[in-house]
Image (cartoon, rainbow, N blue to C red):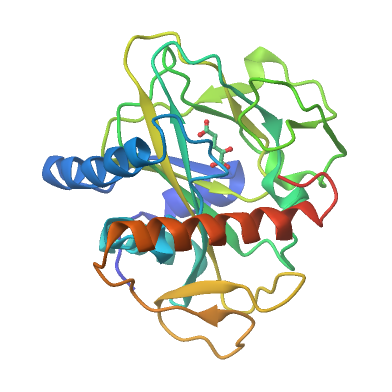
Length: 273
Ligand SMILES: O=C(O)CCC(=O)C(=O)O
């Protein structure tokens, strides 16, 4: 197993439900992945929603290469073990002075997955700061049971239905996950997390890769996944290959359809996202 973390760091992840900052990308790699993302964003009209931006790794080579980057996978392997699937990918952009925020929530509430062998690598494509609305977490909250959530439909909430956990989160219990471009965090599927609006003139972009172990299943028909490392002896997912570097218009149409399918699948679970 690649040793990217000390035993203490792995234990901290399991105790706190989050680990950061983890180095992942070089400056050149950040430039390459940002170029891929900003091109896609422009082609989608300049301000696509997070829901429009899911599953990019299945159709764009740059997004596949980022989701399966060796440094990302080495870190995930230290948490989940040698057999790893990319379940889904989401991108969370916040534009300059963007009022968009993410309410406190637990992902495990609405993903419809059969176990908590799930971790998210949130890779910063720009600096992610307190001022521009970095992710925030409540350390240790993943150890509590899944709490009730409501759909608020709040207009600037970046989650599809504005899902919000029904628990008061005190400011002093929140930790800011501050990252430089190219660094990432890992967070547990049940940790309470959210983020504030962007109060700066620059943008904030996070590329979130959701990883599972192959024994995990998802309610519904065999959804797509990517075998990132090791083997899959369970066959709960349809394993898709690395996407070709083909015509971008075809890739955009196929990705839009996949994003719609994922949203529909998640909408079938309570308090969906
Ligand atoms: O990008 C953010 O601010 C929050 C992201 C998030 O909710 C997630 O990755 O699960």
